[in-house]
Image (tube, rainbow, N blue to C red):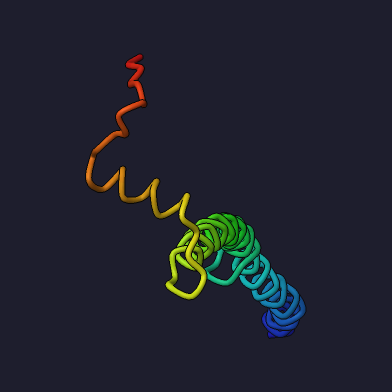
Length: 102
C-alpha cells in the first residue's frame, strides 16, 4: 500500500509543473500565431502603412483638383485655365496651333 501512496505522490509532483508548462505553452503559441498575436500585428501594421500611403496620394490629388477648381471660380477666374479647359472639352484648336502626333 505504501508504494501506491508513493506513486500517487510522485504523480502529483509531476502533474502540476506539466500542467503549468502546458498553460504557458498555450498562451505563448497564441501570443505569436493567434488572431491578436505578433504575426497579426505585423500584418496589420503593413496594411496600415500601405493605406496611409494611398491616403496621402489621394489627398495630394484632391489638393490639385481643388486648386484647379478654385482657379475656375467666377470671383477668381484665370483665363488661361479657362481657355485650356474649354479647348479640351470642346476639342477645338486655334487657327495658329498645330497638332503633333507621336
